[in-house]
Length: 295
Image 1: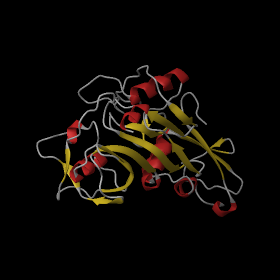
Image 2 (image 1 turned 180 degrees about the horizontal axis):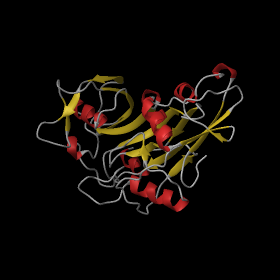
Image 3 (image 1 turned 90 degrees about the vertical axis):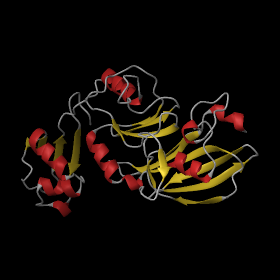
Image 4 (image 1 turned 180 degrees about the vertical axis):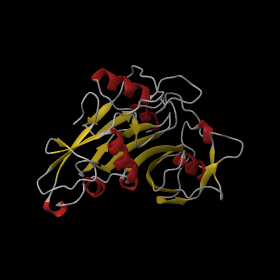
């Protein structure tokens, strides 16, 4: 449940946790981190069967434990009205289908709009008290599915189990791709002298990209790509390294094609375990219609 000022979560204590302290119950069942336990102890509220309790007190079988989480700070991002393609939402997560051409968060040197600005505007319109918690980011000119946590607790659960969040991308690259499938296992680091560009470098961090050829033409090839690591610009750098830069990715050797915008990279599948219900969830998204120009 989410009130106008706080996020509230409720658990029912089973026999296995009879006599266990609230602290240990939340650490085990709620997967609370030490930092979150401290925040709840200092600035949140705990109720057992409607009565206020302290974090060290024991629980009994059948108890109802309610946690009122501390209010969240908004930070410096300013709400701005804008379109959001929300394809799923509940009180814990939100799934967006992001268009190409808009950043996820405002650039440090710009006051321009972003997905985060638009989300805060939507939250304000609903009287929703939380700030923006991005779980899976996309580059400005990459389109497709994004996972948003709607509050800090949900964000903590998702990011601590980030290896269980799986994404697949569709990409269009220049040239006639030669391999049917494979793994690119090349470390990626920041390019010397640049704050934006990345490059394959022995001094970089381990980076692994799996690819599968979907279809191949003379000028363009369609790939399905999965990330085994999450480095900045990973797909773009690895494809460029192989000699098949993404269409439209001028930063890494690609060329713009009339009728399209940004690099031809789209997150078309998203799989994750729901942070509260623990159910596996899957979402899909078609690439932009403008990609028909490559067919």
